[in-house]
Image (tube, rainbow, N blue to C red; front, side, top):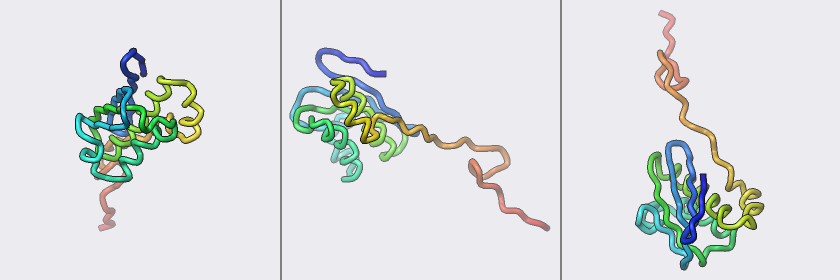
Length: 133
């Protein structure tokens, strides 16, 4: 799940169909997503705030450089997966952050997935309109 090397701290996060891998380097607080600045990639203040939340709670906002690789799903799922990955990497970096991140609910993976399509239905649960005659 998560491992450590001398140069960076690595972790992976998932949400719906999205997968995010993160590397935390010592740095000045920049966040790169797929080699682009996070503001350019997500282009949404609430999603960027979601990325910054675990870093700010740990008090590491101007001490780390975050390099993310995200794939699959939509932007919201990718941001949630990235947030989980960052929280897990911070947990690997130092066990002191664990209680703070755990209380904020950032170390819990959201298990909800898209329900499969069933035969005879239009979607997972939506049935065709009933006609008596």
